[in-house]
Length: 131
Image (cartoon, rainbow, N blue to C red):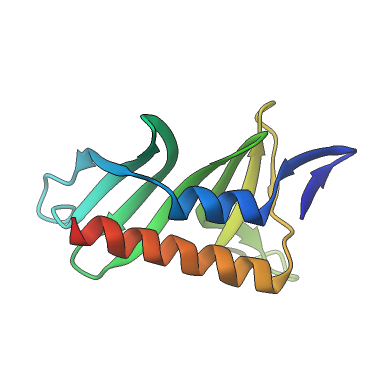
């Protein structure tokens, strides 16, 4: 469970519920060039309110980026810059929390929670691609 001081920013349960309970998916942007034609960004809504934004590679069925609304901010999945112990920069896919103040930090969920969130995200993407 993610917390900031005594204030709870995001829980795995609310993120999973948001991903499983959307009722509409609308295309925000579709790739237009040769290299981006398979990509589309979708907003997932429940009752007309956005609950998530997902960038999908429709050719490969991959999720390069996702943002899921939670109580006090957003849970974001995507490439995050890192540095090795030797100071060498690299990027990796990771989960970040962006709170209402705009502060970013690595999401610290239990490994089971990350697995459940990732599964719910993949299920949401599959549902979007079928519609």
